[in-house]
Each structure stands twice: as structure tokens, then as C-alpha cells.
Image (cartoon, rainbow, N blue to C red; front, side, top):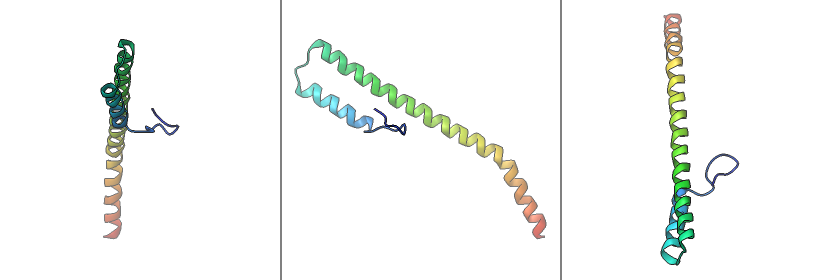
Length: 84
């Protein structure tokens, strides 16, 4: 479901719609229905992993911003004192 760059080739919503269409239009065997359900679970896991990754990146950016905030404030104070 993902390309070489880590993002999805097609969004999960596309795959959900395709699976729903298959379920509506086809007379599936029990094994095929189970396979479709496993594919839904795979999509769910893919989306959960993407959300976790996005959350991790957001937290990392917040930590970096918090760590840089004192340095930025000190640089601003230094610039003010040099300008005065």
C-alpha cells in the first residue's frame, strides 16, 4: 500500500471503497469474505501506524521548538541590548 517514499500509493479511502464495491457486487465465498475482512484490518493498521508516526513527528517538533525557545529568547535579548 505504500510507495518507496513511505506514503500511500492510493489513499486508504480508495481501498475501502474498492472493497465495499467488491462486497456489494460479488457473491463471495466464506474464504473470500474473510480475506476482504483481513484487508480491512490491514488498512486499519496502516492508518493507525500513519497516525502514530504523525503524532511522533509532531511531538518531536514540539520538543525541538521548546528546546530552541530559550536560545531564541536569548538571541532576541542580545539583539535588543546591542541595538540600544
